[in-house]
Image (cartoon, rainbow, N blue to C red; front, side, top):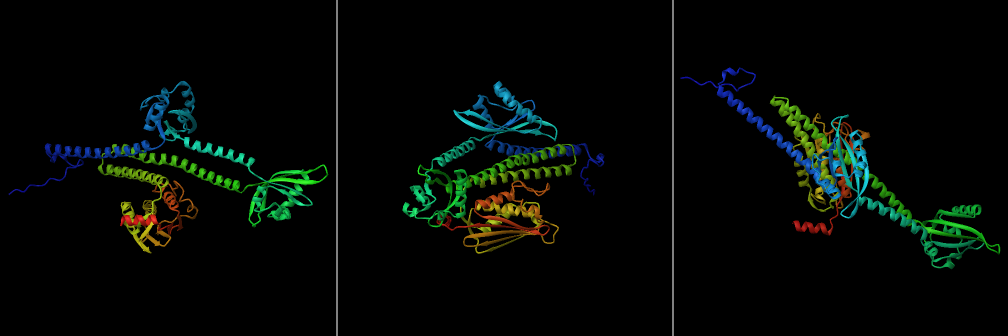
Length: 540
């Protein structure tokens, strides 16, 4: 009885003569089918990535358009098409000449900006246009599209409607003018005094300013008691004796009840026909104005911070969105040039990593926007469940399966906070601990400790990872900060964690030792008010 001999799997490097023509055709057909499936999978990934990018561009509030060096539109979002339709009655599409939709005067205005971008430089312009009968203000920024450090393939325009910001700025300027007018016409404390008698006249505003009930009470006072520093009064006397007048001298005065206030004082000396010497003056209470100036300075500092963060956000976002796309594009080109399946699979893995990085970055942007725009919603939270959910959401990270996790909770598992923001804080701290762990250590671990108090709760995320160098510890919460070019994150994680913590009126800090590990502490107040109790009743 004859036994059939099973032929080995066909190999392109082996002897093909042992196989029939039909077997070879079946093998080739199977290879074509597998290659077609890989191609379709790759195309689906590319289409998904393209759809995500188009969604980001379409959903932004900015008007965006890119053109090549021939002024032909490469891509533009619907917001830009709407703007051009309102301005020029045109419907721009890819391939249209962007200057062709403008009148000659407008072309001449914008042409230098395009040329500057084509030379590799960025530009910025503020323009005013009428839209639907209303005057709008726009900030137009030009950025070159570069394939490398020298070649410029076109330019991208970001057009931002800054009308509301302009209104705020104009309002501030008008308020400043109004404040100056009030300063000139405010009801001031008027007084007259003589070297022999002291105060001989004060008006009602003067009485109210110093907290006295009657003029007679003030006339019997020695003038020194009205000054926080009596030596300051002597300085004013010397000044008026030398100049015969002084204007807007800042003086710290003392009220009847012992409290003090700053007054802006002006005075002059004159002699009547009888030779009697008088000192006349006016005092303006500057307390409210000084507080307003302090508030304005704080607002200006906050505005500077917001503007600086916005600049970094726009620049870093465009860079971090484009970098994975360029990486995928390069890997696609390389994979097309190789026939080895293992190498192709390796390139596909790299593409998947780039797509995941882009997806993580977009999620960070969404979390950043959600934290800034949505109101805080306090509800009872099962913190144990929340921690485990955060772990599960991150379980597919590359290093998680090699790290030991520990959780301890003191004071009960129910806390009162904003579950979405608290989840964002925990996920970012856990992701940071995992991404920068040291797997060469004998027992790599991440320990989560929560202490639930009556009016607050504290979360500590401890690891024995790489740790942070001393000179970098103060920078890790900055927007888009990365400790090195090899950093795995987006540079937004710890920044978002800090912003979310501050939105909850909490504080975040880190204790770290380079080479030993880090512990991040988050302390957030909790208030079990009536509204939270009502939420608890509804959920129960």
